Image 1 (cartoon, rainbow, N blue to C red):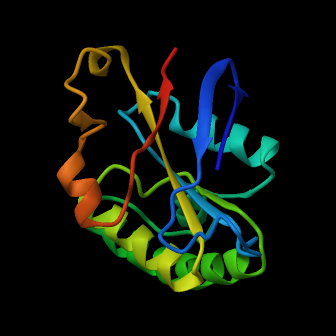
Image 2 (spheres, rainbow, N blue to C red):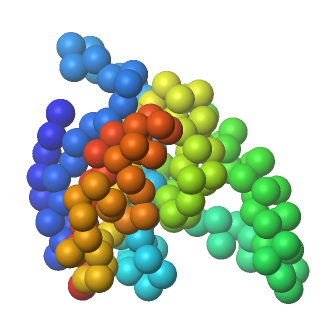
Image 3 (cartoon, helix red, strand yellow):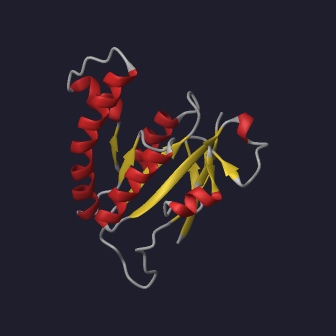
Length: 169
């Protein structure tokens, strides 16, 4: 199923991407949205805009880490705090998706490991997923086989189909 529209001045066309979707039936599960893009490309802005317009619950790992009071002095500290937060965020997200609530992750789109974790979430929930890729100006001229640091073969290997592309700026 495809739809199109403008989101925060950026054109997007939404394509449902799930091995669990059957076009002849309506799923009650929500959709898990996650975002890939360079630092400063507008991932948080897009996440908040998606949350307002879809509607969806936006989950920002940085806000959880700050609210829960983790003392982050090093990358190792962040890794430990992140792991603890993900152990809470994962089950919560699965339940929200199963209840038909769409979720936007303002994290988890930029690394192979994080995208694999996201896959376990949407598969466990039996939910649709959508990867949003924000293309910075340096990425606009990149090969179409390499988008946002994700090769086509890698997308296939972790079960993520074509990403949703957004232009930065």
